[in-house]
Length: 458
Ligand code: SF4
Ligand code: SF4
Image (cartoon, rainbow, N blue to C red; front, side):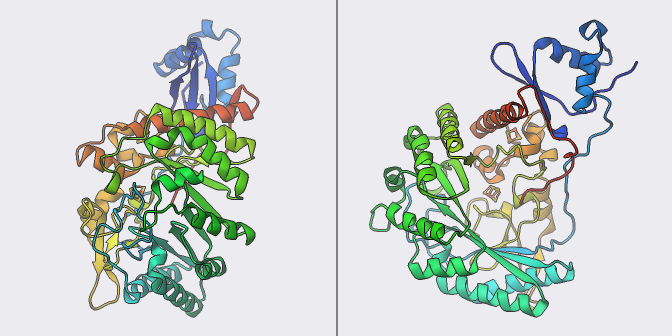
């Protein structure tokens, strides 16, 4: 009888000569010994060793997981072509900031300030609103982001959202708004955010002493009490928000306590934890992408679970099947303060080191629209994981999807990506998630039927 391996399979070594057999596109995994791994390798090589499975029960088990004889897998691939037609605009409102964080990737405060004008914001809003109307969608979206603290350009934030509302009413659409923020806000700003935006992502590092070590005001004082006031107000109002915890090398050991502090004091549901990015003011700082980080993350995750919460790390996301890590390879449309189009949140200004890679459009003088540089855009579209050589043999490829391209450029330059310390973190934390799924499904195997297919990630 002929038997076919019908899944892209990875074996992930564990301790004690055991392995996870993982079929990402079947959303299936189980823990196996070397005999089972060899059995699968033999089938793949064209032979079936019946002595390893005399009663056929192993083959039957593998069929149940769609690993054998289940036909071709659908790849979770979306591709983009032609001129982009975004229905979300990200506005980099300013390069100015009311804090001076030691690890700021944007070196905010050390560079000349650029503020977006209302005209630049309106043009972007007009463009995405008209795209949404033409596509017969129900809504379009505005995201306010950094390069600085967006709320520092408060007048343009408020006026642009008001303008978007008018535009939406005119076109019979809804507008949704969200922002990143350092959380240092006045009560009037908090009131406006609660009344108008859909959600906010706040940078907050957990224990006040950990936060205050690195997230300083312009006068060099800690900002944790100000941020906690904002978060507390969001909790009182049941306003949805996420927290981003940035971990520098010196704070790794405190991560579990920081996560516990957050869980014990705030209602937040989404807690994203990332090692600090060695860029901007943190370029020469020691890396936090270490085994110590992985261990601290694991302990922090256990503490979060004890509160019924979960922490996340951006590249380890078993819940997603995608060929895109972020919007960079899927026509993300972000406007710099000067009105030009970037695909990347770290490339917020034309004078950033990798601007030539990420800036792919500019306003058209006459039409009120944009002209796009398709070679630059197509290069970005080509970063989807199926085109990234180094990722092809990696078991995390359909969930990590190649990780942050900006980070890989700062590591490898324009040379072919050869992996990074983040890859090790990503694989270890993804492995944890697979084992958790197996445990939650009863301890023998994990299989989510009928989930093969594309779930693009923004
Ligand atoms: S090789 Fe690295 S970047 Fe590529 S998918 Fe794997 S973990 Fe992600
Ligand atoms: S490439 Fe990296 S920095 Fe740029 S938008 Fe994507 S995740 Fe963010």
